[in-house]
Length: 108
Image (cartoon, rainbow, N blue to C red; front, side, top):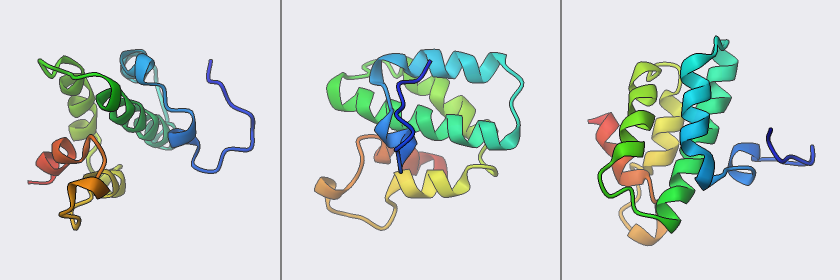
């Protein structure tokens, strides 16, 4: 269950939940999803993982490995999301996401 009001504009960012990243990953892995469903769930996973990095360190990259595998497997579908979250044209660390460096590695 997601906590939504129906008034969200950037819903994946607004309802991101850093405590549920692995739950979202598991749902993605074990459910048959359409390409549109995959896209929006991946967007939620990335936003949630970004918030997770803001509050906690993923010291051994355990969560990132699960997220990364989904991103790589769906790279063609979500190329624009990878570009957006990588902030590839930004050099000032104050203007990138917590996950940007990891996302940039997917592009190389």
